Amino acid sequence: MARGKILVVDDEPQIVDLVRLYLQRDGYQVTSARDGQEALTLFHRDKPDLVVLDLMLPEVDGIEVCRQIRRHSSVPIIMLTARSEDMDKLLGLELGADDYVTKPFSPRELVARVGAVLRRTRDEVVQPQTVMVGTLKLDLEKYQASCHGQPLDLTAIEFKLLATLARSPGRVFTRLQILDQVHGDAFEGYERTIDAHIKNLRHKFPEGKGCRIVTVHGIGYKLEEA
Image (cartoon, rainbow, N blue to C red; front, side):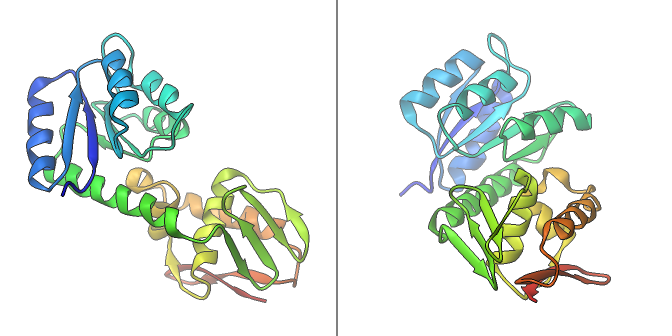
């Protein structure tokens, strides 16, 4: 039985053939498209479990394909790009991509990324929709948070970060582990940005009520009841 349906979108036939070979060896069912318009057609027809999407495509580029997919679906998307500029990576992630791989890449690495993203998104499906730690309450479906009955005005990233800590209260997360949950591997090297988000979250918690984010020096952060 196939582990999942993967749509691979790239206009370079040798890349498509290589990625298909490695994914099929790992048990995935693979379809492919060589331009953005064909990708959108196959996406709506086949309803894949994950899309591997090149950034630079003829007809409709990868950014627009990602944008159109996100209007209708939360299916995981891994972007392929020959560009190394941070802004290109950020743009794709802001549009809703779950991860990215920079060309040239190892097909084994891509298969590992596919498996990791699918596991992460499938785990999210079976997790409870409400998480509580002390008087902190998170509605994971509505993206709403409150502490001691007071609503918390959180950004999307702050909410995801807090949800990561709240799902395992008392567990110490490294910055990279938090980034992996919030952004995927895409932001490796930017782990210090977590410190800024933690600082903002602490300002938004009612002091001394419900729970607190604790710094574990030299390691990372944990959430515990206050």
